[in-house]
Amino acid sequence: MKKYPFCLNLFKVCIVACLLLLGFSCKPKHRYLSDVKVKYYQMAKADSLPPADTTLERLIAGYRVKLDAEMNEVVGKTAKELLHFQPISPLGIWAAETIHRQTALYVGQKIDITCFGHNGLRIKSLPNGNVTRGKLFELMPFDNFLVVMDADSVAIQQLLNLAAFKGGWPVAGATYEVQNQKAQQIIIQGEPLQSGKIYKLATSDYVANGGDNAFFLKTVKRKELTKLMRDAFIEGVISTQKAGQLLDAEIDERVKIIKK
Amino acid sequence: MNRRHFLKQMGQGSLLVGTGAFPMEALAAAKPEITHITLLHTNDVHSRIDPFPMDGTKTQGLGGAARRASLIQQIRKQNANVLLFDAGDIFQGTPFFNFYGGELEMKLMSEMGYDAAAIGNHDFDAGMDGLLKQLPHANFPLLNINYDFTNTILRNKVQPYKIFQKEGIKIGVFGVGIELQGLVAEQNFAGTQYIDPLIPATKTATFLKEEMKCDYVVCLSHLGYKFNDNKSKICDIHLAEKSKNIDLIIGGHTHTFMDKPDIRKNIVDAPVVINQVGWAGLMLGRLDIYFEKSRAAQCAECKNIYIGK
Image (cartoon, rainbow over all chains, first blue to last red; front, side):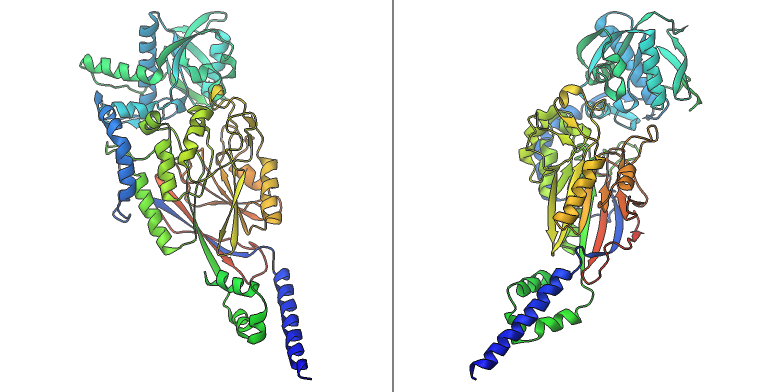
């Protein structure tokens, strides 16, 4: 008799436990997602943001010393801010002309056409005024080397078709029109693209090796230079500076959109 | 916090139930219990460690890792349930990468408490050995399900997914990457097998939801939001619309600034949120997700409120 209440209690506990277990096992597999809210924080210099984290500042500072000495060196000066956009921009023209000129200098022969990807240039603009070595690293952060190719008219047509399809790529030594995402009216060194002719094409090893979907260039005969494209830009800027000139380019009609 | 403690007590046995009705009452009286999880995210930071220099350009003075860090800290103070993700292209864009190969980027992200990151195409820019060399500096995993690294030095160095638990809520996170052919110099990814992410993404998301019982599944994607010049190329919109069991895609690659997240319906008509925050650490994305314990349906309705820039 004395044990009975205890047993009853135990029984009750078990029942409740079972119910609870049952309850838990029946609970929905996933929790109800009641709300999703979004917020975008603009990382502005606005006072609304807390001050920069000092631990991180210190960590960065250690790395910055070596970098700053080299990167803050002013290597040239622009006449105005050179913007980068498609189909062709002042920065694109300046960059293509610089590579065109410098490559000819490095290989000691005339380059017919220079062309590389719009996205190969990684800044939206070169600022008005002083240009530092660091800025040119930002313009061309990739360790891409210069390549001079012996490209026939078919390869040139394919390259400019790709340029047209991609919305317009910087070019020097040549002009082209974009119609229906293809290149037409291609003029190289003042002459229409001539079937069967071999052209000296300057570009980056990235494009030459099929980057940006330029697969058709992979088999084209080439001479790979040991010169980084970035160094070509830096040396081009320095030589302009030495000549007492400003870096500048005006937008022209070398890439003309007839119809997308 | 309270809830987990409470559940633990419940789990420890039914003794409490026998001795008093306290937990039952607590259960009945409980207001719809809400767990609030804050997801913070970046993408395509591209070695932007310092704010943009004051050079008269549009982005001058914006961004910067140290300021992002303090903002993240401030948010962590408001809500302990923070998850911090990056959708790839951590590397390449400033001399910091050219000089140090991404070491500082990884150290800073570790300091900030990043929980996971996807792999972007530019994360291959120093080759696979370059990426491998930086992994010891990262205290968070790189997630990817569609690069087969079996025949490369990155074998077993990249995780497919990771599950995070916050107050009993399970968040499953996996990563997908863009096709490398034609985008990355071949010697930099040689041996890596790219797999179309669509099928493996649904497979992984379903595994996370159904087998691992995740309440919410996040895909860190470096596929790109959409491609106007190639509409058939797999992108975040296609992934959202043609998959299932993914709740959120945190995107990258296309450097897209969004005014609000894009919400798409997947193959079973469930909403998928797509969000991306431009590039260069110019913006930090924040998604506040509220889970209600006592309601039965899962994600019957997802509201998105744009709070403002």
